[in-house]
Length: 395
Image 1 (cartoon, rainbow, N blue to C red):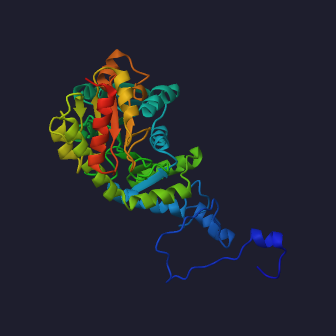
Image 2 (cartoon, rainbow, N blue to C red):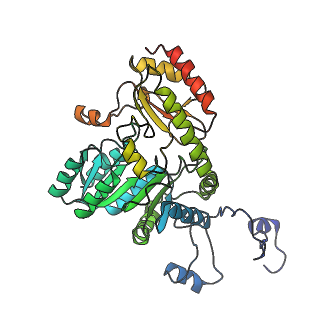
Image 3 (tube, rainbow, N blue to C red):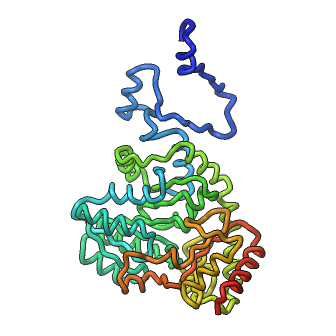
């Protein structure tokens, strides 16, 4: 800028502070700017035509978001990643972008309720049909794929909240044989698991283990380059863009991701083993226990067993409610993967969109409790559970 300007102009056009090329910040800065600029029109036009790298508008891309995308793609073992404003935005964007009127989707009762709602209510409204099955009935999956040309098979593993383990190799092989794409919600397993399988698209809620602190919301779609290139254009139109501040927090969360995850898995195993000794606990489900019906499959597919535990408390929902309210270290809250331990009693877990057969598939009863185990001392968590069991009056 040449010449002296008035104060109102000076505060709107502050002086630039350039960092020398050999004087890099240890932590990448937050690019909290919606707009980027070039020195001339020609270079701006080259960017718009895909002839050079750069940034123009943060709804499309941003350097802070890009760092997070590159990190996540490497962790999940795929070429590319696209981050979104939430986990729901990630799975919904992927399905909206990939499905057309007349397409067919195979999905499962044992999956995140908002995903089911998107498929059964929103996509159906636009002419996308679906078949809802149980994740353990692979014969039914093959029959559905044989009977109807299918665009997408949408599933998760472990399932939320009862921690069934999907046979990923068989599901992906069936989908590939019948020309369908697979979309795996990999949130409960984490961004370091399942890369070895022939999954076309991974989606994650970054709000959970990646953030780890309950203070940042985000989602990710991770796939090969061609898939993400198509989805990136769709995201720019739909506008579910992650904020740079949230992206910075998520990137920071990744620095302690493995430390937290390992501690949470260690604590969850300790809590699960203790629960297995308590006569009040019924139908205990933790994939790391040999008593889990799919323990061998979980051990073969995953590096670890996660921090989620589910079980039933006899006596009905009132007993489970008293148990949840008596806990001091487990907080009644949604979500999972936080440093703090969380609990959801049956009153907050019941599916609202199932008939009797689908409810049986889900394995969610009126006494089902879900724990998300944090990084506290495992002995303290076990003592808290024992106190709450005594206070609840569970038989």
